[in-house]
Image (cartoon, rainbow, N blue to C red):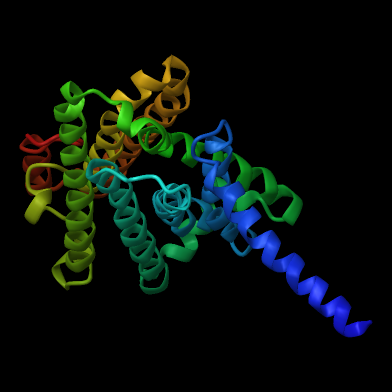
Length: 290
């Protein structure tokens, strides 16, 4: 009887495995695609239960990476042929997210002021586990909205007319340029601030010569490009698909512009009496290249 029970249990597991794979394979083509994307972004946001600040740093980067990788995995499970432009769209999110998460994790360890800055962050007020649940849910939902153009691109890629190929290509070029610019800006500033000169001086070298916040510019370009690359798919899918994507894009653009203003104000307070600093400000843009 024991042997028979074990055999029956093993058969149940074998039978359940294809059923699970079949269930997952139908997600991308169903109305569950966006909830599935939300679930993907929620997984790394659970780092907030370790430290609530992670939801806007390492968790943010990993959420974008999970979204891109997860959508490709679900499409593969569904047996879908993944066009090159769709692959570039999703892989761009993976590269962006992994790079950003790794950088922010490294900075949290090497930057002396990270702990003090983290304590002052709004999300740090969520002390209890119960208080962190809505933080995880809201932030992951926001990240899902920001990443949603990729969902619709995966869903209806083969229904997009050839006339939209240049639009998708342009969006991907902007997305990847933004990714590379932000990576270069983060590296440039980190290296400069670790030097003797940079410890008590603003960063105005490399990509910072003509733009005071090229890292934020790269962030904006990445998300604008990701949105544009998915716009033809959203047109095919229907106007409702623009709602979450536009909400996410508007938020990140607003956040980056407001951060630029705050950083400019802080630097002005610290270096405003320095003629060299004022000359740099006069010859550079805040979020644009001057």
